[in-house]
Amino acid sequence: MNVLQELKENQTAEITIDIAPVDYVPSFEKELKKVSKQVAIKGFRQGAVPKSVVQKMHGKAILFDEINKLVSENLEKHLTDNNVEILGNPLPIPVTEFDVDFSNPRDYCFKFEIGLAPLFALNLPPQKAVPYYEISVDDAKIDQYIEDIRTRQGKFSNPEKSEADSILYGQFQELASDGQPLDGGINTKTTFAVSAIKDAEKQAPFIGLEKDQTIVFNPANVIGNNVEIGAMFNIKTDAAAALTSDFKFTIESINKREAADLNQELFDKVYGQGSVNSIDEFRTKVADDIKHMFTNESERKMKHDLEDIMLEEVGLALPDSFLKRWLKAVSEKPLTDEQIEKEYPLYARGLKLRLIENKIFRDQNMQVNDDEVKAMARDMVNQQFQQYGMLQGLEEAMDGMVTRYLEKKENLNRVYENLSEFKTFAYLKSIVNRDISNVTYEAFQEIVANHHH
Image 1: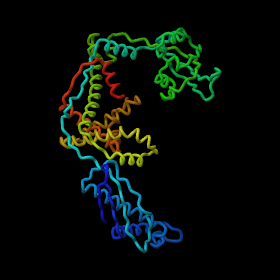
Image 2 (image 1 turned 135 degrees about the vertical axis):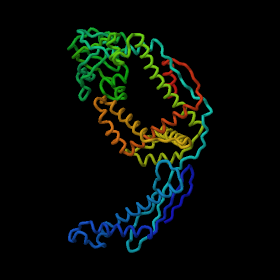
Image 3 (image 1 turned 45 degrees about the horizontal axis):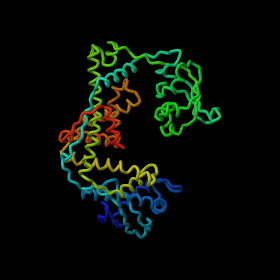
Image 4 (image 1 turned 45 degrees about the vertical axis):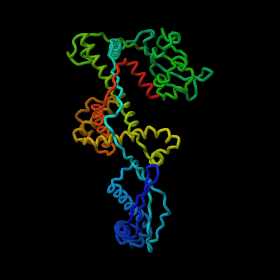
């Protein structure tokens, strides 16, 4: 057995594994014996099948398995013993046909291409200060948030006629260009908020409608917001963008949400019994909630900016062409070269950040303990259920669910990844210089939008 590693260009290397009969014949013979005892072949007693018969029928498959096992184990051992840090997995380089002559065993040669992780130095903290946006909570924001709470906690009523703030429910039928129902078109019951029509002139025909009335209109023209139209018909946004038909809408009910009064009942409902006892205290509590929300957004933005700065300062090079080939080879659904090119930058960014993160984690001797793993897994399981709005009565079953969640290797890895990301970010936050600016929420949203374009 001989294992050789040779450096190639673009951060790749080639590993050659030479196998001689002395390496594989003993384990092949042993496996053949084992199979002979187990196979059932017509005309022979169980366990009394001659070895030559088994070899003829199953020999090639058994040999292939044994050699495969041997190659994998030695490849793994070579990488571990020599501390070779690889990215992705080794890609086999096609070799000559796997021919077999049992009376005359031969040598085999296997080759693999590997992508090498870059070696790099990390200067911390980064030289550049990280932008940090402190978002101001103004009265207008608090008012808006309180309006939302009042609306959410309000009661439904059913007015006779529709108004600008009504929610209409009924049957939508897509029409062909001649005004008749479109064959195979959308035909569904759904709700439609009159306030989704932003233009007052276009909104006018929807005010003063009664139950059982019908109205024909063109959503693309009247609503003009593809996200809104997509949500209304439960279709994807790009499908909504392509929707230009007229629709006949038959109203089945008119609903209106009456905002809840600003009183003790509302305070108790939102913040629990007796924890808020006046409008001033309610405003303070709401302001704290908004501040907490804003801080999370500021931190998320800071994290992204910090990652940009570190990537720029460290300047990592990856074996790009190897990784693209590897991604194509391991993808469950076939990927075209265009798809790989499109998705690769995001993948490469994530990979570089993980390399930097792992280095910080190691250099700072960070640890992850069992309690932290369980707590993080509990959060992740919780989030999954929250998405489906299923949190009632789950507490007692939670421990069992967390244990089952962590039994899956990929879940455990994800928890470790999240924890190390969380810890390295906490560490970086404590050492970086911040360049703080005070901004309104609107200005902050604009900064984020411009950054991502």
